[in-house]
View 1 (cartoon, rainbow, N blue to C red):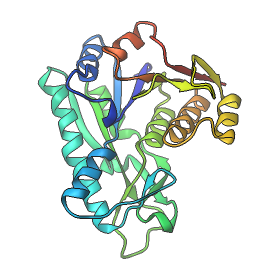
View 2 (cartoon, rainbow, N blue to C red; view 1 turned 120 degrees about the vertical axis):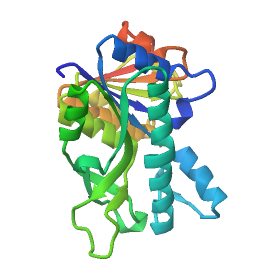
View 3 (cartoon, one colour; view 1 turned 45 degrees about the horizontal axis):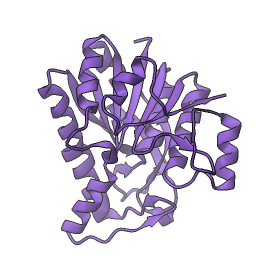
View 4 (cartoon, rainbow, N blue to C red; view 1 turned 45 degrees about the vertical axis):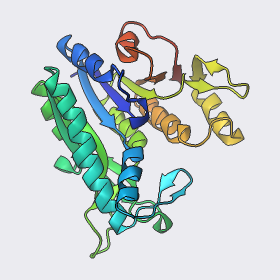
Length: 260
């Protein structure tokens, strides 16, 4: 329980040759305490298209009306979460799939009315994670939250939240030793496209302000800084490389380390 690692995996890192699940099971069998947080926005988009529900994005986040929220909940807490959980268990790992709603793990308020049912994390209640970890399980967390703060009476009790800040907030709440983002890039690049091996908090903030770091990398950086402030080592690595996660525990292979 003292050496917890939070791993954020995105759908874009998975493929037929992906080794992430295999690495997770290997690490668990070596006695590592792991919490997995997953995304899956690309699969949500596919299902919205199948169902004929239009979707749009503002500043990189999905505008989530009620029909979209129902699909987000079904896909992320259902299909994606259970596929990852099943993949770990079928390889003889021990995992339990939950969402941020379970055990009131994540509590949020609505971020912006313009965005609809998209939440900003306000509180993490890690008791359910601690119970699962103590029981020898890997919690696999889908990025949904309890809409518990300033919720209108007729609003749903579930709200959609970006998985990146959830990973950072969970790492901070657990006092995790390490937060690892498995991405589809080789780390953070400078303005010339060269990978940066080490990046300070001040440098990261300056690169966001100047636009060098943009889009979906911004919430990842902010999540790393949140965990960093709580004492976690934070890493952004290329999850497409074979056994990237296993190599990370053996000393690292590329990627970017953020530090204060």
